[in-house]
Length: 190
Image (cartoon, rainbow, N blue to C red; front, side):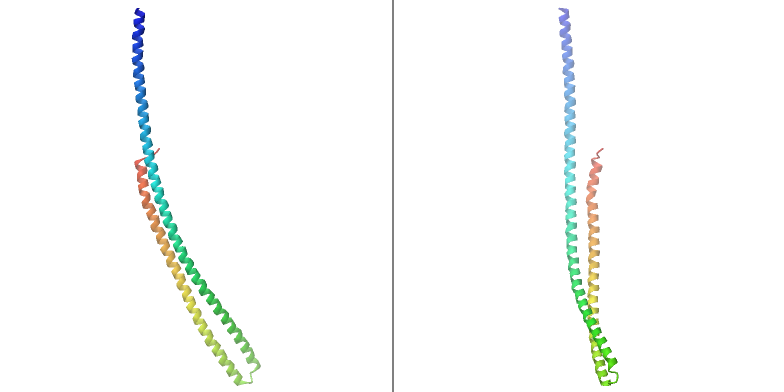
């Protein structure tokens, strides 16, 4: 009988210790679950912030690409204009070459007709007319060259505008990255 009483008391003590251990274990498990929930919520906030930042960067890149596309279209139009001007210059150079060949032929004729001054005078008048035509053609070439210079100046201005826009976008991206750096300071990860 006394042995049964001792075993009952020991069982009661063991049962109380078991209940305390079970309660402690339950507290530990609940605290771990709470910590995991907090870490999960923090991770979700970080992922959401990262998605927002990536979206902002994607929009910035889209704006940059659209701006570059518009500038490339402008440059393409200017190059097309330059191509037309250069074609015109090439045609006028071909005409000048024809006039020079014509002049060479007439100068060659002058050697054969040195004794005939009237023919020489007429040939000189034709040469004068050719020179006048050449002067007009050279003036035309000068105008086209001025147009080409103007187009090159426009390209330079457009490139400067693109450069300024890219610098402004770079500053905006740098400015948009500040919240991410602040978030890194607020939620440091090991």
